[in-house]
Image (cartoon, rainbow, N blue to C red; front, side):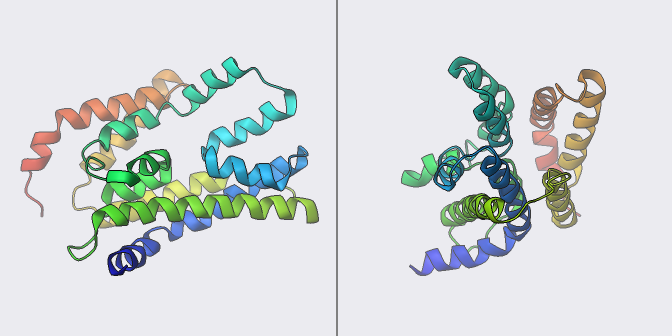
Length: 232
């Protein structure tokens, strides 16, 4: 029990930026679902078991217009293809996670991935349970925000324009925090420059997967030089 409490206490402060972002984004999702006539039960169900952020917003439109299962599968694969790269980079980190490994894989969202890339628990905190509570807390925030939005969507008439920017703002906060605490900024610079180059070459709608591939290739090539580089 003590190791769980220690991991939870250390994990919680790291998740506060996600708490603010997921509450707003989840609420926006819940409001949109309510406006499509979807019940609170299904709002909670989708956030618990789908838990796919951007794809859940796409699902709102699909549910409203009717959808083909094959088309939905392909669309989901395309929207969430970036998670393939998340999984590849976490193969070693999640290697010995035991029974909680399936949940850790399932709950590896963009924001959870960002937090776990640089957050390292101290020696007296179990890394396994630290990763678990980061993932679990973020999941709870999303479900809680979605349910809150479902309730508010029934009670209050909302003007939702601009709510989608909360996700961008959340990434900026997480990136800034990681930049401030990282001793080596080369991976961050590789990420930013790869995204910019691929945005120019492939355009706004198609740059994400190429940029992830470029980041993976460049950082793999630089792995040994970065490991040998002395920390100042």
